[in-house]
Image (cartoon, rainbow, N blue to C red; front, side):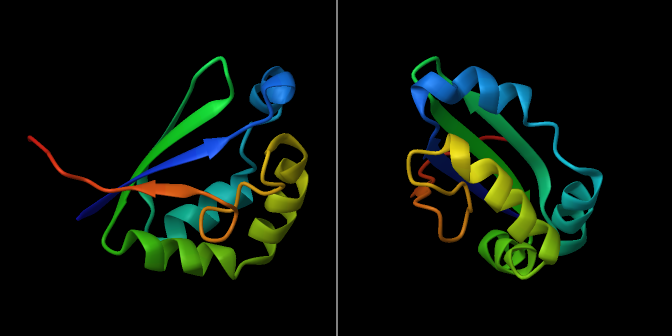
Length: 105
């Protein structure tokens, strides 16, 4: 199982709107699950920094599969208004992937 951790930046003045609108659509959740994404968690700081953690057999491969779905395109278009980069797409939206250097089970 691979683990992935990422950073994204929401416009600070849109953070409350972002959180209020982040009820992930059931079909988007299904696309993530079908692609093999597991244990996906998001955290935020008041300055708009978002930290994401997710697991899967092939994290970036799973995200590529999600990126090929129609629902992902619609979701990214809807969420783009909140991100400084103009997109929250985990594959191509300006997401910064962190390098794992320690883990304990």
